[in-house]
Length: 476
Image (tube, rainbow, N blue to C red; front, side, top):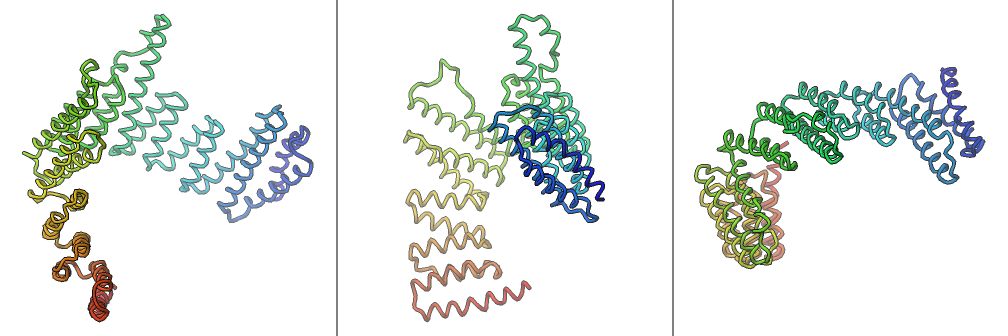
């Protein structure tokens, strides 16, 4: 073992001597480095290897490199910089390689090596690391995406990136994220080729026509990816995610129309399809000559567009009376209501639409529980406390087992000093599961301490304790 360690340390000596000769290290510092490296090497030769020893050794070498960089900057000496640093960097790579071979499942170790390679621009080394990493962690789609992106963006190799995505899809044929990123990459590749072709055209080079395939420039490969994606991954939300990606590229108008037509054909009864179609009314822009100039005119046009959106949602609800459809409609109305505007008329229109949508969803018995809280908050903002009381009564009737809803109702009654508070509390206890009732007891005890006599509070407390003790015993 000693001979092996000595051999490794001796390989380091020529580097230290060179650094000493040019004044980047003192003789004392060189001896200190040898001593430290020797100690670190011995730790790596133990029978029982420790991951922390590898990490400490790697960090020591990285810190040493940074020290040399600062000293070179200070004295302005860069002779043989690459030659000397290459030895130290190679040592770091070897240490990482030994560590990842030993602890193959430690993803953080792999990622640290990847980051170092990117920092040092060690492209060949990083290519090998990704190859080994994907062999070990082929079950992680995110790593395949990372490798493909690096090949495309840093290595400028769309062919290699494409091969990585194809291999990844053999392992993960149901990964939506893989298809999304592959689709995006193919569109980015088209964009890159179109830009290159335009540069050659401006330079009057005849080769521009021959170098680039018309089929590829017409998004041929992206269409193939899209077709495979929608065959393997079902659902309007995924379909819409591909459409959203395509919208980032100006040359995809035909492809967008194809995706939208498929969406309406395949998922006509999906709430997300209708949500998209409704919101599309907002995104449609007028031609430049017809674009409004005044703020008032802009507000009027926006009001018209929002009204058109509302009509689309209402058409959807005519055939899709579901909670998810109402949720999307309410979400849209809430988003528009929260948007700032200087137009009082538009502000009032948004408020009226939101209130009527809340009411319609409630009347249909399809307003999600979370949206009742938004509705109640709106009523308080509008200083309609009486309506909030009525609404909370209706909400607890609809969700009788909801502790949060009962608590909200009791808090409001406490604020309003309502006479029927205790009756409502008793009703809540009768309907809520005993093991979930603690927040209600705590609320009522706090109220009693503020509003009632000490004796009454003690009596309430004595009733609450046995109730919670029984619950605790039952759950053991």
